[in-house]
Image (tube, rainbow, N blue to C red; front, side, top):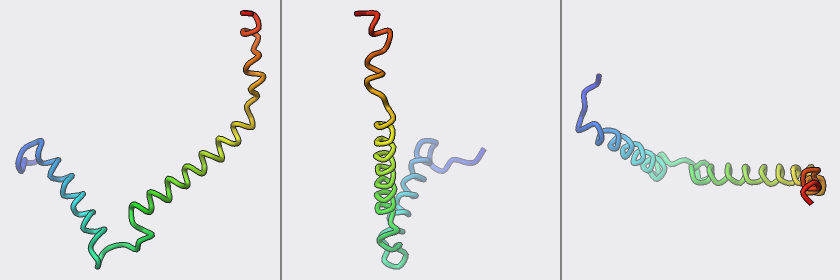
Length: 81
């Protein structure tokens, strides 16, 4: 088992904080910053827009394929009346 630096609960938190801080410095440092179109925020926005567009297209296709009148007038529903 590896040695513990501070404590079993603080070590993972320190690692997570260090990772977020390193990513922040990478994104904001003028020498190492990626172009604006390749930043994480823009990439996530592009991915969400693409996903929403696919869901809209899928929803339109499914809406056209459903026979709502057939679902409403089921044999079980007719027997109850």
